[in-house]
Image (cartoon, rainbow, N blue to C red; front, side, top):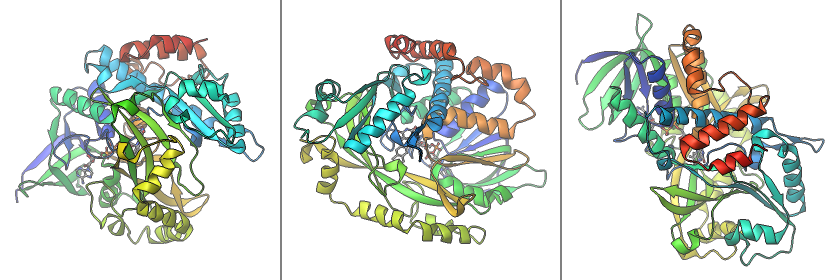
Length: 501
Ligand SMILES: Cc1cc2nc3c(=O)[nH]c(=O)nc-3n(C[C@H](O)[C@H](O)[C@H](O)COP(=O)(O)OP(=O)(O)OC[C@H]3O[C@@H](n4cnc5c(N)ncnc54)[C@H](O)[C@@H]3O)c2cc1C
């Protein structure tokens, strides 16, 4: 054991997309601050941010039906869809800034255009989709969206899904060309390579075992080299806990009052993956359906074209499941060890309320491959089992807390929890996830560095021109940004121009 102690300005725990994004923003805002990254795995982006552990959808509500809910009066609430879309525009702008400034290269290594579609069957869901389309059709953020109930049109859009389909019930789909597939794993590694070139100290194989407040108000971390067992102390004025599923434990260790009473519920994911080039060539879209009754929102089934290392494949899923681990490479004791005196009642309340969800997840884990193929055949009627393999994806830890809706409420979004003095912040939750990393990390910056925001604003506006402006209220800005980001990121300009009518 070593007593070596190192001081730095900023420590980022975890080398996933969130820390990569926060580090990249801070490096532009305050280049002379020293930043250290501590990651327990051997490389960056091995957990949820890895390309094989998530669906790679650039979430902008172009196709995800769970972002638009039907209100009791039958109208469609599009407020969440607008929020997620605007947040994705922010990510596109920051990535474009990095490319235009030559800080990162080859955007096609992490982002490619793939049309986004919603697909439904049965009268009730067709009515819903029609109403959803009507609610979005004239909204400039969703310009370019097409709708059809015509099987011939759908055959043109999704030949693989229409082949051998029984047309014994109504079907409908929406399609928008400006959707994207994002390789968040590649982006994470690209951002960390960039940070390394900017002298950020990145320590892989280093696990943060403990976090304590030091007497001078800074934070002291107990860090263990997982290869040698050597332990050292690292101190920093500001700590970001970007540990993904590992963040809750670290937040609890920090002891900040804002972290009390919060629990976590892990939901695992599985995809079916097809790499047969003949099948893959027949589908080019991300097609989202409706979640089965009783399923949590993150298990909405979708059939996605993925582009990983320039090779196309198809992902179907995710099938949700239950595992007590908080990280894919986590421990079976993660869930039990997260239950503390301060969140016990909240966790118990959540346990009672979510028996049916837990039962659903356990049943999902037990599904045989053939049962999963049956779900896939709702999308690809003639899918052949031999073409599809099971892939274990990342873990998502949903937040459990007491809210106005009651004790022990399960939350499906993300939340930044920070100390009152802004010296430490953690990101909990997983949805909409990596797509909105830039907005979420700007929120961390706003919450934790309020004294600097005024001074940093001009630079933030240079990086994210729409910062502080509602895109929705400025349709001309949407057109401008979609076009400029499409150019910078190598996405089709035709698509963006079409979206500007
Ligand atoms: C099945 C699935 C599908 C998804 N699909 C999408 C999608 O289509 N689009 C989208 O935008 N998002 C999607 N997401 C969400 C997205 O993947 C996550 O929101 C995002 O990757 C989280 O990034 P992160 O940096 O917070 O966490 P992670 O990528 O999990 O990184 C956390 C890092 O912290 C490290 N760490 C943890 N504890 C410690 C410790 N004590 N010491 C040191 N290091 C530690 C871990 O090893 C890990 O490398 C999906 C997620 C899942 C699971």
